[in-house]
Length: 260
Image 1 (cartoon, rainbow, N blue to C red):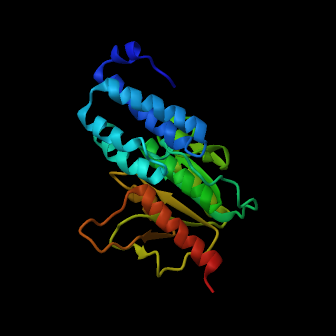
Image 2: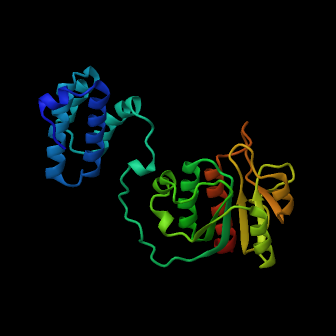
């Protein structure tokens, strides 16, 4: 990444700020490579000078002597947060490589995502599902699948590690699992739902997650063997669906694998 004075000054203000933001993230990614970091930092400082942004110029004075990544980020992240959209996991570098736990133990748990709308939520659930070692994840109704670009990005590469399928109708799917002897639970906030932390959840199990706004349809809940909920102590009575699945998934893992 390198720009001449003339080329950079020819950019719009938004484009200039975007370039500076790209330099910040490239420097973060290459911090452990001194020569590359130095070259990127030199070009960043030039761009800051040419940008004529007063706030950035004040930061630039402190950047010249920075030798630690934490200090670099402390100086620039507040500026980045003010000038750019919120960054999400796919924008960041993961320092610890994946695949350290080479022996994957499958959990006798299947999750059905029924009519979820948010690709971001679906990708997050996929990432959690892979970490848990789920048996399978099923995309039902209009839930976006890993073929959706945003789902792929948010899943952080786990779309290629999970056994998944897409189904249009949920009832034939639930019938199949019930016939095979699987226990079916809806994760929902109904008044008759059991506290997941005190309920018994025998394996194998299917967990149904519903639409972010409307939840699981009543007829689907009636088909389930049980309804489970995550207790809350605040004013809001529910969590984001991706967060709720993470809490539920790890509680099930604890019950089945780690409870003495």
